[in-house]
Length: 380
Image 1 (cartoon, helix red, strand yellow):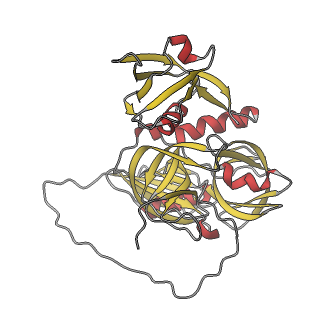
Image 2 (tube, helix red, strand yellow):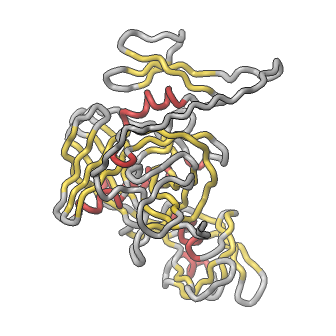
Image 3 (tube, rainbow, N blue to C red):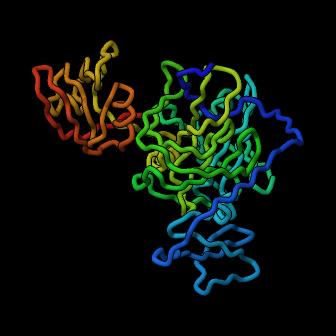
């Protein structure tokens, strides 16, 4: 019998024990098409990837020296093979152990120097190690390095770890605010402990409100939804655009059951990289991060459309601008608000100090638009 509900789960494997049988089935599918003379061939950009450092250089004549591999990126299409060759060395496995077990997740190298490197991953990946456990990083070449936790943010489900090894290949940042539904994407990570696994798909939705974690310590994600296969162990890995730039941190999957084995059903969720970069920059600089504050407490008993304000926090943004208690938030910067979760997710998608347009239904009737400058608070 088919169930009618989905459960959001962090895509992190709790056990690293896995046995793979020999019966892999490889399917080959060929799709035919008709080319027409009026359709121009997509332009391509050719680049050379250094075999040792994986640094990428523009190829002006379409050739590369022996020390570098030639890859090309289509302007109107996606070359998954080229993206995988260029980016896989920047995506690592995160091996975690603690008093309650062990597990494997993924991460991306976001900053490096001559002596050390920083890796972005999910909080739920490293959480096992926060009470006397250990974190190790496995590079794409199989080398394993001890890592230390720099900082983590449970509200955004993000964490940064550091290794004392420099000159690692750094992933290139994209702009998650410019992604669109239907854009092709590539996911790279370590599902089920299978390092450097590459899958592809499209962006299925944007601004998808998703919550993960336990009651009282939820993470709120203004998610990029994708049908690229994401499985347990992909958490913390990279979601890439057609140019091989990271646009999201893979974090959760939807399943059709509330327990037991889980796997991809084509509903994966990634934290937008613009949000993740702000948090990781703050963690690297100070060991901590911040979150924006509207200064409202929502009425959890309200079941209507929108998010009703039950209380105002004294001295915070909503009170300062004059939003009355009992108002129902209907949209934030043009994005429709359906309930309190979507309101929290949308507000937290901004940086502290951002000015947003909040449309509310007033308790006296009618609607009003407020321009609100968000406050700031330490993020847990």
